[in-house]
Length: 96
Image 1 (cartoon, one colour):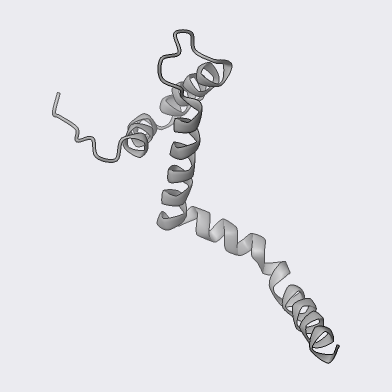
Image 2 (spheres, rainbow, N blue to C red):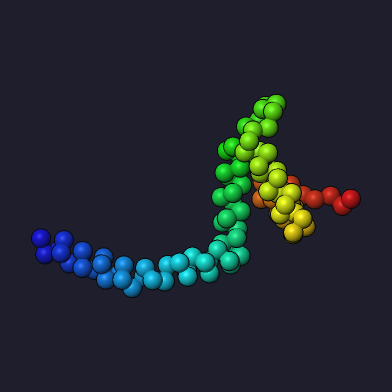
């Protein structure tokens, strides 16, 4: 009984200390190189799970994704290449 009460008190105290800072820490992490790499990896895994090979007509998700990539590529020309690199980490670029 004592241990459970102590555990709850410690848990509540940690929440009080940590909770106000979590959002700031997450923002800082996701803006770092490690955070961006994690986001790229998660997005690549998500996209690969949705892009089923052998589908003749693109799904709504695929069309939306292509539109988003086109819009991002207009504002950041390196974005399209970053998507390709994330989806194909072993692919090497050949000079054009």
